[in-house]
Image (cartoon, rainbow, N blue to C red; front, side, top):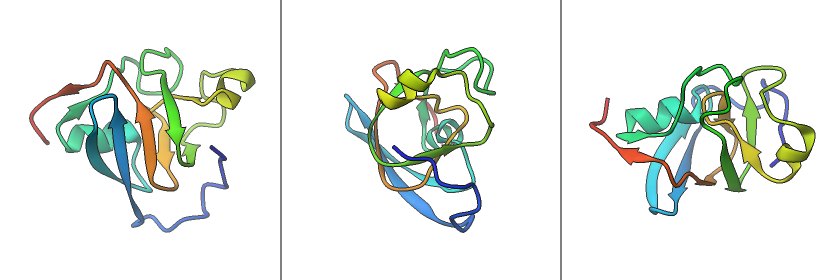
Length: 109
């Protein structure tokens, strides 16, 4: 659940992401948000602002490591420690398991 510096991975690194509780899977590049990667794979994660402030997409990071595209996403320190994340501005840095009960299947983009 750590957040290494943004330049620690090459842009073309790809990680497997599993969405619970549905056991859906998608690949996320290290240069795209989890929201973007999921949408490309035909999975809609809840969102509204897409910039980390509204918290509509708040989910749980069960396993893995992410970083954020913004300096201070709309999560408190304690929420981060408890494993909450904002997929609209979170970028995978390892294989992930995320808990997003509100996710829906859509047409892949």
